[in-house]
Image 1 (cartoon, one colour):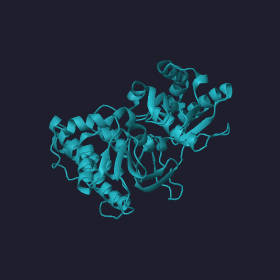
Image 2: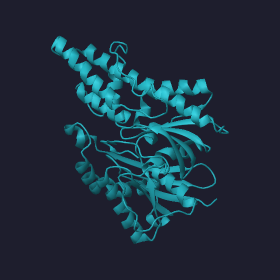
Image 3: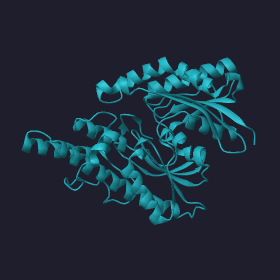
Image 4: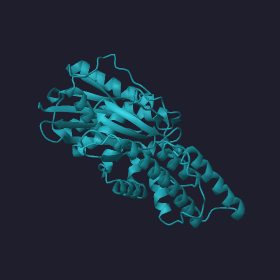
Length: 363
């Protein structure tokens, strides 16, 4: 198998990233991975501002690529191709990355490979652990939440997903409602560790309906009402009130994800995969309560569980470079007509999911 070395570029949300990945006959090697976050830029606004994110990408991308090449000890002429996130995501940021990739390819003659951001996440288990097809992927992040059966580098079946807010988005909104800092996931988890998860009876949306689709918008509204009820009673929130609200919210999310995962595993296992595996990616996968629940579901179903390192669960360019390698080996690459896409479903046959989250359009 020919050794391929690709530069990956990622700018679909609020992380500017570049990485160099190489693969020959053995496992893939991440030669460099640079991620420049934008939390400080968006913190005053309580969430990601698309215009600010796009401008930051435009200002940082070239330096980010230069740093990734320097850390890998390579020059552009030593690469085999350039892979770039072409969607889905915040369109201004996606355009910034695509235009830079086109410029590099125009100057060097290197092939251009447009990568679906979600495919990058979905193929991460192959980058880190050489996972065998088919496996079940739960992508659970700030902007997306989907169950995908990964049959091959370009073949995906969506079993279900969120019809409104993604879990990470719900964590962020809950944190804002309770006066906690952003990003909301770590803040809510820290508070939940000190709280009573049984104090507030919050809904478990869509558990009364068949299938693997999810909804988290109503859960956020329930937290708002529970908070307002406590404030009306006590004229404010105590630290314990806040911790109990966080614990109750987190428990509801855990219950929904665990039950929907059971259903997704049943559908996946019906095709008798040779080496059954559930992989999880996305920033919400870092939540210890959620991860423990998913591990328990897998243990009950006798299915292997895989969570890549956190740095490769959240947005990064190494996953884009690797997905580019998978496409390139299939003889697939793009022309200069490659367009940035705010929406780009992996499963071309299932109907589109409803809704569009703050961290990008759902696919």
